[in-house]
Image (cartoon, rainbow, N blue to C red):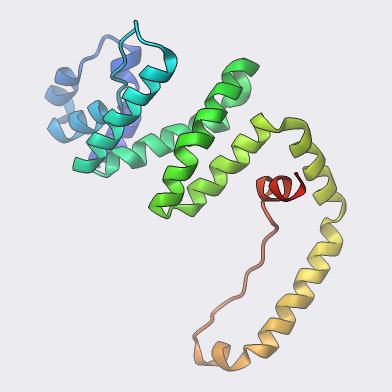
Length: 188
């Protein structure tokens, strides 16, 4: 429960007059510790890169004590990336570059591939906009043919693996399209 409360309150220290001490009084020390872990530690006089590095160090140090800090930070970054269209193009690019440089490799190292894939797709949208749109158009044009091919491959695999399926070792076989960011990297 503390993680959910902290996730809702994660920006309150930065965006309001509320302090970590007040959060601790109202919601308990566990919530306050999580909120403090994801709160930026930046000093206004430093460069943007220096502030960003200091904030990341703080999050990682806090995550060493409580891994829920990383969960909240990744949820915040995913939300920020999904709502980036409302920002200026310069800010979109800056945030997408930071995400690609820091959060994508971190998600990969942690083995959280669903977050990695989501973040890569969103970075692709903002860092390779036109190429990403072309790849989406190309994919949508051949979607029906690909679906027929995938169904055929799926049926073929099912006949090959019938023993494993009947034994319960394999319950279902799912197929999915190659992600856009992978297609663009291959085409480059």
